[in-house]
Length: 418
Image (cartoon, rainbow, N blue to C red):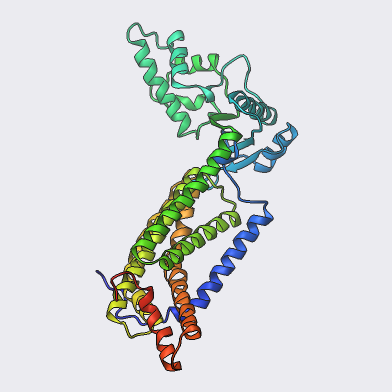
């Protein structure tokens, strides 16, 4: 294994109070934000409602859009601009309308409300003609085949199907999903003046285009939220049992508390930076639980090995030596994983933004909690047991001290270590 440090000798346990203070500050800041905002922000997956994807010809004025939706009775609508590093000024937004009633009809009604509100804000297309910005390959192919602007006698369906795909590909890429001028389509291979004239006669151009609409009922959202909590608790409980069996229960308790600490801090960051909790975020949190636990187990396993070799050394010194011996491994694995998820966060786009953010925060917090929270908790328990040994022991004071300070490390070791 590559060694980044040559025999480091850092007193990690002597700095435990600083790790506790840092964790306390992060937890206090994050959960103060949660309480001030009335709880965590849940996505449509958990809250229930209709999420409508809308694209505009130009980046919309969010304040104007929000005021217009409020004027149309959608004051509770949430608007989120879809942007990333490559396109910081996006012309795409997600409009979420909370849904109180059940069923698809309520979701369709919410979508119609959004469309009507947008038509009143930006103006509706010619109602006598379909909107080309809302056309699909099938509908555009049917229109072109019916009018036959190229006067094709054979294979008209196949030729117009290919042409329709080219037109819509131009709309969705070069025009960012919204056409504002029919004449722009003359740049598309195969669009002749006759085809352009046919499109003008049969279609209108709206100021915006509706993308997909996702509908989740509030009952389903609440059930998903409960299941997410149960799954996370099951994962923590299973890991507690495994580590308690593999080492001892105090190690398992310390590891689970450290992972629980990681999840709470990550959720606090979500509240501070206004990210929503979705199903993909739950997947990221479960990934974080496994990643942090793995790093903790590596350190605990080295502590177990060193306890066999260094029986007479104080337990905090054994823990320090164990962390220092695994330090290069920790930095290499965590550092490379962090770089990967950081690139995913910066370049992965809006869909993966919350997922990758949870991993970015979780890997940093989970790495330091392994040696800054979990290990110090085991040492603190060891010290407390040692003090109890002095208090309740019998015999000379020196003998009691030996029993309390050195014997506890042996008692906390896994089976077969003595």
